[in-house]
Image 1 (cartoon, rainbow, N blue to C red):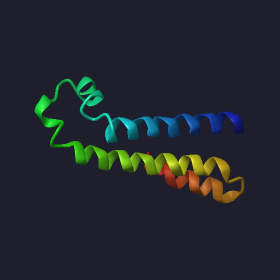
Image 2 (cartoon, one colour):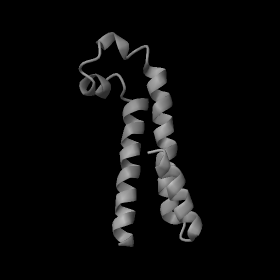
Image 3 (cartoon, rainbow, N blue to C red):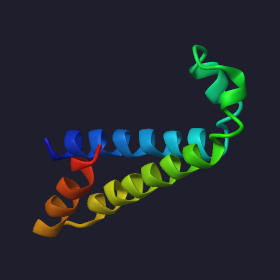
Image 4 (tube, rainbow, N blue to C red):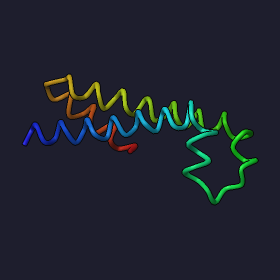
Length: 86
């Protein structure tokens, strides 16, 4: 059961890393493909806002990765802290 839990945590952490990449570095390319209902002229002015959200997802990902390496009761506390925001 512990292995399954670790795999799921890893999956969520990798998902947050993808969101970090998507929002910080590919907002004007992948963002336009993902959010087709938004006007195209909206992506350039909101690039800084998207990068801020991407950084937030990066911190969540780092915390989830960190919780995988802590093997005492602080690992569970760290996991709960960073997964609370997910």
